Length: 102
Image (cartoon, rainbow, N blue to C red):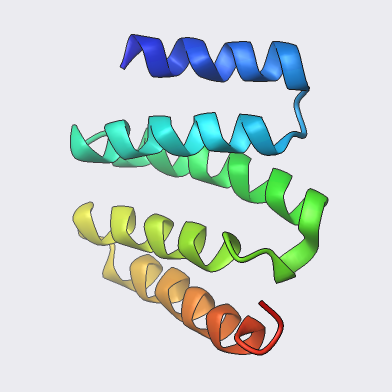
């Protein structure tokens, strides 16, 4: 986990705060956080990545629906089914909307 956190810091230092590379590093960290039951921290990192991806590519980015899905999954694991459904729905709508463009 420490190596993944170090890679986030390195990506931000080398590529900047709004970079594709930073999102890749953040996504790697969120996998580890989710697998170890740190759902809230995972969602914080996923939201950081979401903001960057929207800034870089808008909602057309193929990664946005996956990020929404992952946030929903974390909420589901925390027992917050209402929030989980909200994010699952966002994911499905964007995936359907972007289907013809991606």
